[in-house]
Amino acid sequence: SYGKVPDYLHQVKDEVMKEKDLIEGIVKDKMKENTDTLQNCYEMDEEERRNLINMLKTRWDEVNQKYQKICHKTNHDTIGDIKRKETQETELKQLENDIELLSRPGPILIRQ
Image 1: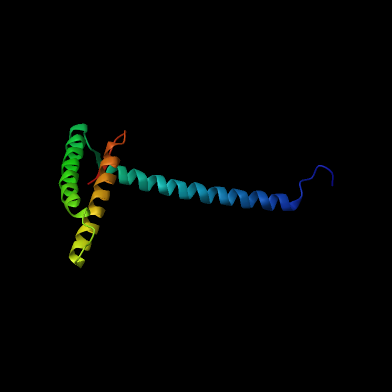
Image 2: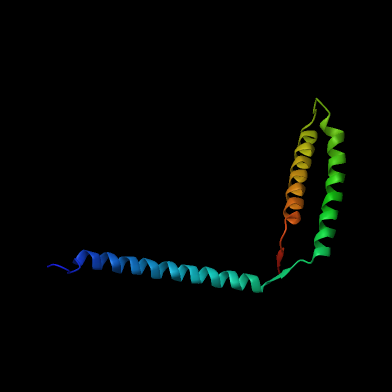
């Protein structure tokens, strides 16, 4: 009895090995998916990135100019006024997010 590994430890070891194999299989599948995804992508060059940021900033200025004209109204009489204001707020926020995303350091991959 002394020095002999209990049977339940063999069972636990087998379960751990099965879980490890399962996890390795899932990781390999994910890595294959990522590799396939990367093969269908190309990297945006720096000039294209700068041009896109400048175009987004120009669009932001245009939308902001329109927004500033209506945001000082204290009484929005019509549903159209309210919807226009909400639409412009949403577009401004989206443009800000896109500019921030493109301004981050590192490569930008574009799916083909």
